[in-house]
Amino acid sequence: MGRVASMGLAPALFGPLMNITGSSLAVWWKGKPTDNKLKNDEVKTTSGEKTL
Image: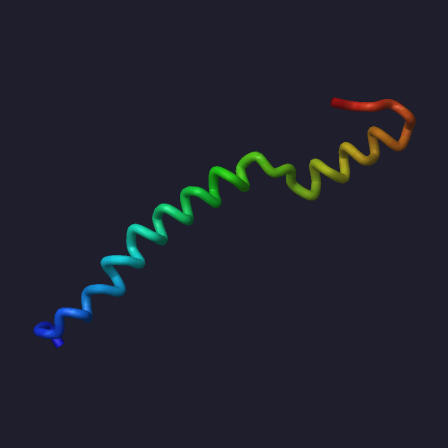
């Protein structure tokens, strides 16, 4: 199997692709509010006060 040139193609492509997409998703999801934060904001806004 070591002599088959195409055997290394999948890991060579998947490794960098996994790192790029994983890092991008982590940065994107970092700014998203969690469910707990949304629930706390909803409780505050039901009293009539608006929060920023």
